[in-house]
Length: 414
Image 1 (cartoon, rainbow, N blue to C red):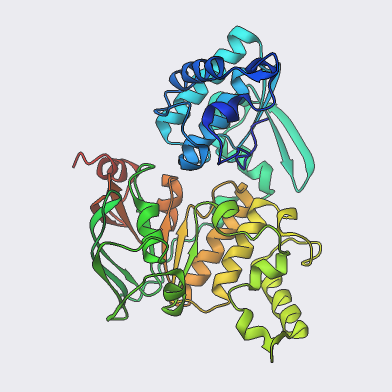
Image 2 (cartoon, rainbow, N blue to C red):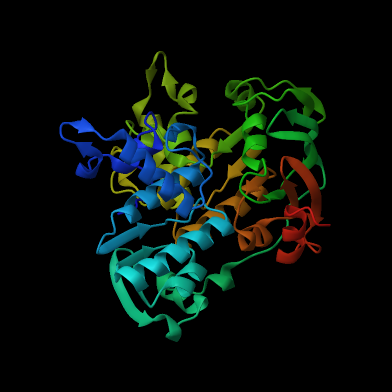
């Protein structure tokens, strides 16, 4: 099984992760390091991963960790291979490599593949048959040749999503955020843009272009080396997430598991961690106020939770994401930074997140969305800023933005 959330040991090398639990890596009672590293090196070459077997997994990007997990599963040539959202963090080139290997497994080794994905174009490309589930119930199984993407979407959600798409702009034209020449050595340089009140500003580009790094800098995780940030025409100095929050900025990070969820806490505790001071009565939490606030959050954001006192990990990815959104909106931010806000969630939950983001924008909150899914950027954004290798290559208005134009700026061929 290749899990959606990468279950690797970050403090161990790639080679040790690949062979963990395998008797192949032992020589008597000792670990056969030479064999492990030799085999891992071949595996990395096969997957075209520019890493060394001795590299720590914790030093790899999310995309590289995902490939290591897939490579580990493939190496042992299973009869049945279950892939759960295997390409969620990958670039198009990396996706192509994975698909080629999947085809090889099918043809040469007769491996049966169960491929779970919300990227329906991938299901059409790689699948032979499609089984659709909705709300935990079996819906149908059909040959891929009998279905289109629209057919699959309608089967998954039980309604026509396209009819729900609303491209109305809520931008007031009043500048909320202005960024001038923001630079962090080795990550991005001279990034300048503005964000209007009520605007949804998309950030496009290939994985590794520096978009996430800019968001982390704006939120104070990684302080920029130079540049200026203005909020409502006032210069602000953001050195930490605390500074960002004080200045009305919220962040939905790329990795829910690593950077947003507090796994040891309940659904309610995760939702209210940012507003804990608002719920205090003296030095204790006012449980009645907290419960009432949580009921309001559940209703407003359609969070499907049997009991909000349950652990956060009992929720689906889509509902976890709604909890994170509710967490920040309850704090009345001016700006919401969303890094891959629909990664790893199903089509129905995506539509709900889109609707929530539009409602947030209608309140005058400025939203920045980083997304590797072009249709998502084009559907949601009033404007799209595009990055290439740490530089901003262009900002496109809605009437200028097409998949082709965004890709040209992402590849810096304009």
